[in-house]
Length: 149
Ligand code: BTN
Image (cartoon, rainbow, N blue to C red; front, top):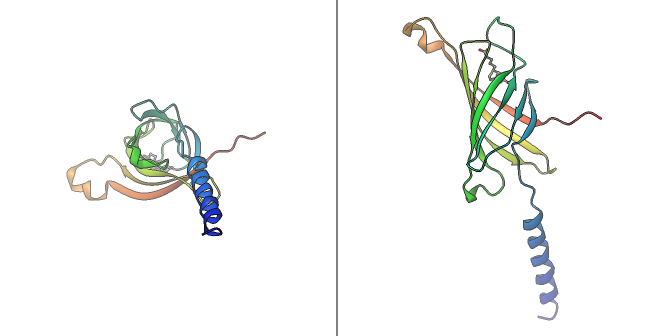
């Protein structure tokens, strides 16, 4: 018992310290994804609602790419434990399309924030017969854009 007590104390302190220092994932800021697209998320309000802008690196159209607005919501339930789920919509300013993203903000093993997302891109088609080919699906992984010195 004499040896067990210090061991339990160390274990308790280690677990406690981990719980206190566990890094939380914060959506606010500038992000880049695996396609090279950039997005900026502005302040997330008390209800989890946020806005921002999206500069896509690619397009399914032949239009000139322009920075487009996004609006989204972060899940605020206490059960999210620092790695919250979220969703946002990008209303493309240079095409007739809309993209919805859904994902989760993770802190990886190196303490780096990563947004794992899936998206649906809805393009406008001329008639209902073409509806079958109007929606694309994919995944994007975002990491925080590091500021250059
Ligand atoms: C369009 O082509 O009509 C609008 C631009 C769509 C860009 C898509 S959205 C999903 C994927 N992820 C990106 O960062 N860009 C593409």
